[in-house]
Length: 292
Image 1 (cartoon, rainbow, N blue to C red):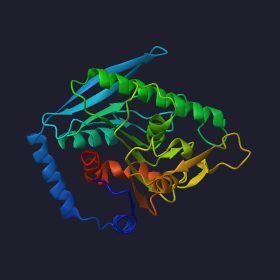
Image 2 (image 1 turned 90 degrees about the horizontal axis):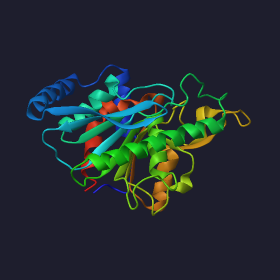
Image 3 (image 1 turned 135 degrees about the horizontal axis):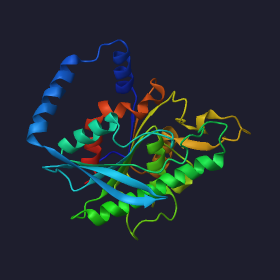
Image 4 (image 1 turned 45 degrees about the vertical axis):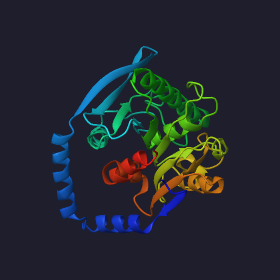
């Protein structure tokens, strides 16, 4: 089973150091490609597009990647990044991630959601209340996608939330926002966040805490690693909004004695919103499968 808390520094620092010097193990990458090719033939996948809701005349859809052979009944619901203003569920970064997990035997649904900040700033000149509204809007769409998937699935497997950047903030808020619009008694099986943050740590209690896997760069200039304002806006700025990033969340989990794994990069900045999509698929698969 997953350990209560893991701090992973040295191996990540070593990876970043090698990558910067161009010393990534090419042999390992070649072997991975060979294995991927074998997986393509051994476990083909089907991708189905579903409309899970229509809001303000906008169709909200999800792409459901289903493996021919599943190794778990659990499904990963993935939410893309883009500052709540842009981004797409079928961005090549996300499709390769979903396809890789599906070929490993894990079903994945990549969802679209409303983008209330489209054409607007999401920086320090934007009202904090508008930022909170974006978190809430995305959470509501995740709840609707969840309900749709629960209705469509022919078995009782659980759902793991997974998101990158704005999507990571969205899945944390969907998992912990009080009184969610979800079926009575439903709980997500776990949460995976790539450069994630949450408004209120107190929403996470011993009763509500979910098994969690987090990735974050200490030097992230957009989403704070610890507890700081969004985009590091100065106090008094319209967009000043305190957030609690992965470092603070992991420490909070430790205090609650609840399961959380944090993989930290000392460099790489906000690139840690994408790095796990390519370089930590094995850890993500293991997390999903080890949930029991």
